[in-house]
Length: 363
Image (cartoon, rainbow, N blue to C red):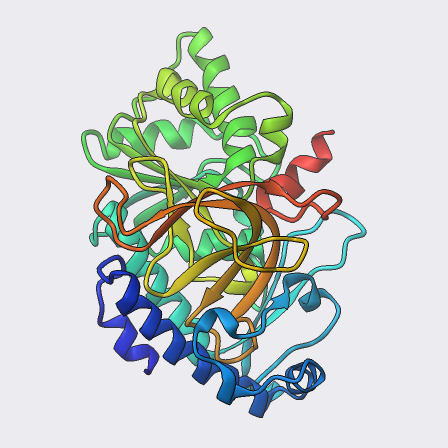
C-alpha cells in the first residue's frame, strides 16, 4: 500500500483487523525498501537472520533501538537527496540522533501531522501563540527536535507570535495586543510542557497577583516533550491543567507524545485524557526480559511503528520509554485504534524529551 492511499483514510476510522492489514502491508514494504537502500540496516537484518517470508504480522518486523540513530548514520537515500537533517533533544554532552529527510518523506511528515491534529482542533488555520522564543527555528537546515516541533505545529497558525523573547522572558505587551486583536476568536497555543509551566504559567500567576490577566477561554493548548521535571516538582497532569485554567481560563488542553525519529506520527491526547495511535502508526509495549508483547494494562517498553519514513529506516523503533496500552477501538472519545499512557523513562535512560532536556538546566 502506498502512502498516498493511507493519507486518503480518516486517521481514526479503522478497526483493529483493518489497521493490522494496512500496517503489515506498508511496514513489510518499508523493511524491503530500507534493506535494499541502507547498507547498515541490511547488515543488521542479516546479522539477526531476518527472513521476509516468515513475516506474517507487522509486530514481527525487527525494531531498531532508538539510540542507534545516535551512533550510526542511517540513510536510505543518496546524500544529495537529503533536504533536511533533524536532531534529537539532548543535554550538554549527550550524543544526538541525526535523522535524514528527503523531500518526499519531509512532505509526508507534514501531511500526516495535518491529518492528525485537524481531528482535534479543526481544519481551519487560526491565530497562534507559540510559547517559546524565535531563535529556536533560525537554522532551517539542521533542525532540533524543539525547532521541528514548533515549525510542525506552526502550519496551523494563520497569524503567529512568539510569547517569549530570546532571553525566555514573557512579552506581555505583544500578547496583550494579540489577544485584543483576536478577542472572542479561537486561538491555538503551542509549547513544550516544562516551558509552558516555567515561563508562561508562573509568569501569568505573578501578573495576576499584580492585577494583570489574560483571557484565553477560547484557546486550545497543545503541549508535549516530557513530564519528568514537573513530576519531580510534584506537579501532576491534573494540577497542570487546573492551574492553567485558573490563571487564564483555558479549558481545552491536549498533550501529545512523539519523537524526532518518527516526526509526523504524533500521538495526540483525546478529551478523555488518553494518547491515541492513528492509522499512520502504532504502539506496542514489550516486556524487558524477553521483548514479548505485553497484555493490555501491563507496563512495558514502548515500541513505535510508522508508515512514513522512506529516507531512513525509522519505521520500527524501540524507545526508552515505558507505557501501558489501555485499550483498543473502545475509547469513550469515539476514536478507533489503540489508546495508551506513558509512564516514564526506563531507569538509567538518558533524558531526551524537548521539555525535559531544557528543564535539566534548572536543576
